[in-house]
Length: 227
Image (cartoon, rainbow, N blue to C red; front, top):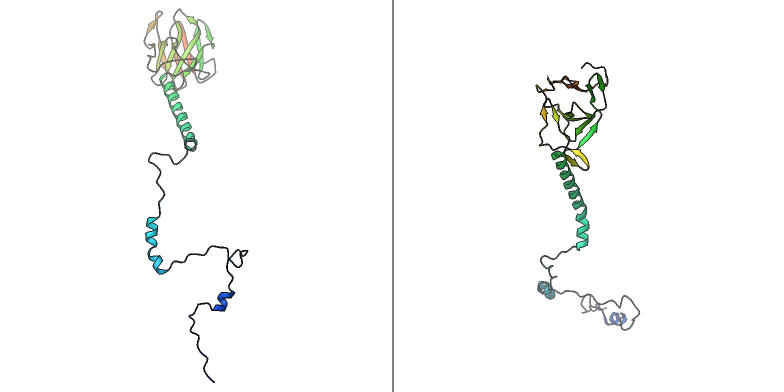
């Protein structure tokens, strides 16, 4: 019995019957798989030329210099909140600087203000405190006393009581002083109306008086305090 003859067909090469049985795109146009374009397979010779192809491929053109890559409207919406914060901060700083330079007078109810004229102790005088000046007070009597006394200024830090003028400045419609203005005429050891003014700064009260008028700023509301 003779040995079977070996086929000389190369491995992987389809035989004539298989090639005839394989459907093609022309024979079966309705087959979606057959309609797909054939995939290009790079042979070793074609792979060597791949870098040349990449070098020859056109690169995307860079954006012109100075041209915004983001629309102007989007960029404005992004920076608008920061600009608003900066504007508010600058406005607050400007307002604080204006108040520091020219503090407005704010009416205050403490410490308690009383004054004595003649034989009566009155409480109808008005006490003001300059904004941002915690140690300064301004006192206004409701009527001029002895033809000269209406406004007084008191600085607790400097321990000075002075005969002052009415505020000459305005800030947002309110009476104001200027920080650089002088306090007024220092009353201590000043002789007016035939008597010398005496000024006392206690822990709980400030008292200044002469023979015509006595003024007291007190932390107590007791009207019977000793003058």
